[in-house]
Amino acid sequence: MAMVFLGCKKEDEVAVHPELRPHFESFKEEAATRGITVDFEKRPIGGELISDPERSELGWCDTENGTDQIVRINVLFWPVLTPLNQEKLVYHELGHCFLRRAHLDEKNMQGRCLSIMHSGQVCSDNYSLDTREQYLDELFLQIRRSQP
Ligand SMILES: [Zn+2]
Image 1 (cartoon, rainbow, N blue to C red):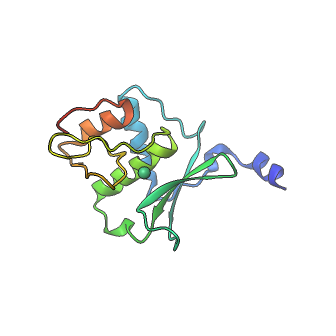
Image 2: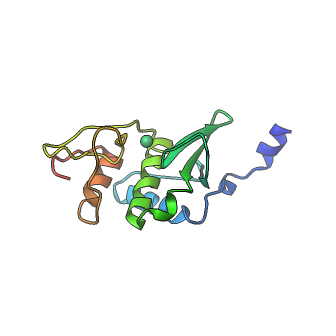
Image 3: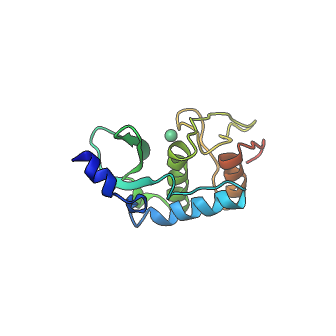
């Protein structure tokens, strides 16, 4: 059964929730402007808005069936985030799922996280329209500037 199902499933049918889709698209574009190819057809990643009573995080990257990767966003928090924070959250989870990055809690002199891949336990970032470019350079290219 499972084999038949997988055999019939086309890669582009991996579901991404409509509210997450624009962020998946812009992630791909931001990567492209930095010379990084993000091909969700070759490496399909799902995107879900879900409620999981076991989890209190804003989002996480899940692996199912050993390989299928899914960005899961906590539906309880999603509606109260600003569009910029929604973007940052999806990018963080795609950082895990697609870029295979781990958490990074490096800080600058002011104690700000230098990466949006921070764990949320040590420091907070300063992600805004002014600092977005630097944070995305860090996300895709791992270039860390001292003053994001
Ligand atoms: Zn994380």
